[in-house]
Image (cartoon, rainbow, N blue to C red):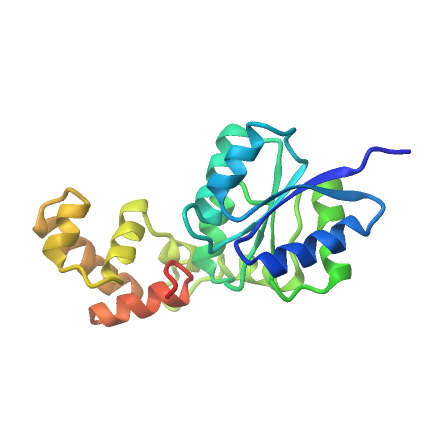
Length: 218
């Protein structure tokens, strides 16, 4: 009998995680060997158990989210194929996750047959992208009225992303500057630059953008 392909499931929603595990374990080709509720828990289990072939990560998790977990896996276990489970599929989210080595994206309402196809695709081809995701990625290279590809507009630096997260809280700009260990004038510069790039006019606009892009959730 061929050895089954090992899968790790990382999701803080226990019922969904168990449902996915039961589905995967019912197949002849795959078996769930690790279950965890966040990235930190996954890392602890990887230190004890054999590394899986595939890791399915939820994007929004407490303690250590899917993005940070994927980045850690790329650095420490680059042979593990990472699939991201998320309700968000904005261009910014796709770019950020692709940069961390994520090999595919799945919506949480994915059909069981599509889930198994995704596992097969990432094993055999090295990636899995649905038609919807492929269309989103292709759209990143289309030019807008200013002849600028969309990906150049949505690409934000780590510093800008950090600022957006803090701007979505009750912290004042002065407190954000302290958190980021920057001069308040530099923070004003980041804010004004985002106003222009994202075509928003207020802090509320920045917060709404961050929520829409899945950078923060309440």
